[in-house]
Amino acid sequence: MKVKFCGFTRIEDIKFALSINVDYIGLVLFPKSPRFVTMENLETITKTIKDAPLVGVFVNEDIEKVKEMYLRYNFKLVQLHGDETNEYVEELVRKGIKAIKAFRVKDHSALEKINETPTELVLLDAFKEGEYGGTGKRIDEEVLNYILNGTKNKKIFLSGGLNKDNIEEVLKKFGQKIYGIDLSSGIEVSPGIKDHRLMEEIMTKVNRFKQLQA
Image (tube, rainbow, N blue to C red):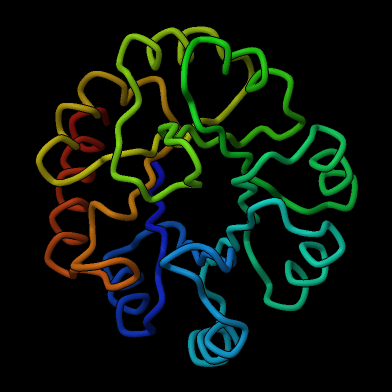
C-alpha cells in the first residue's frame, strides 16, 4: 500500500512526511489551486531536500513545460489532474516520463476512460464542478466499487475526502483493490499547511492495515 500526501508548500512539512516514510510528496503546480507552489518555492524545496520522491501535479499544462520540469526537478512522477487527452499522455509515456493520470469520478462512465488511458498508474478523485482536486469530497461507494471491479491492468491510487476518521473503514472495504491512497485536505490545518499529527495518525493506521495483510 503506497501513501501519497499531496499539496505541500512548506519544507518543514515535507521533511516530517519523509521522516514517517510517506512514499510520494505531491507538489501542485497549478496556479489556480490554493496549494500552488510557485517556481521560486519549488526551486527552494528541490535545493533543500535532495532526492525526495516528488510528484509534480499539473492541470492542462503545456506538454513541453511538463517534460522540461520533470527532468529539471527530478520528479519521480508527474500527475495529470486535468482533461489531458490519451494522445497527450501517450507522448509523455513514449518519452519515458512516469505519469499518474487522475480522473474526477462522477459516475460509472469514468470506467471506460480509465481503462483507455496509456498509464498504468491511475488516481481516482471525487468530482466537483470547476475544481481539480483537494475538495475533501468522497467518491460514491457504489460507483467506486463498480470502477475498482472493472479496471484492467491499472494500479489505482484512491483519493477524495480521506481522513483519520474514515481511513480504516476505507482500507477495510477497498484496500485489497487499490495500489495506494492519496490525501491532501485530510492532513491539513489549512490549504497547503500540513498537520504533522494528522499525517502521523494516517501513517499509523495504514501501517496497521499493512501488517494485518502480511
